[in-house]
Amino acid sequence: MQIILRKVTKTPLDFEVKSSQMVFKGFLQYDAKNLILLQAKLSGSLTLECSSCADEFNKEIDEEIEFFISDGIYEDTSESLVDVVECFDSSVNIDELLDAEIESIKSDYNHCPKCAI
Ligand SMILES: [Zn+2]
Image (cartoon, rainbow, N blue to C red; front, side):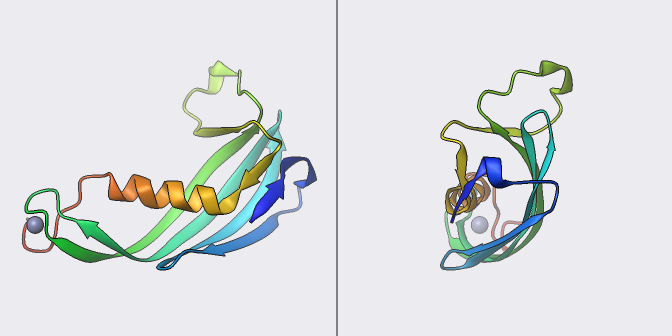
């Protein structure tokens, strides 16, 4: 699902994309200074590899995601605490964002029920 950033206004623009196991559902809303707020819920079940014993296990995911998308380079460093994803072709691909979120969970330290203390 490709969204043209210039078409995002102060009226929330709903989106919903699915991968094989996950649903990514939320909205985009123009904030200020070429920044667009993304707020979404990531839910479903992921097959993860345990960081301790390398066994595969399923984990239920239910996460609130919130960050900003910048139309071009984000130069304002005064708000460095803000999470900003830069987009350079004036559009954002929601499926790619979902893939990136899934990869980020998979690359995290994850422990199976046996190794979780
Ligand atoms: Zn384990």
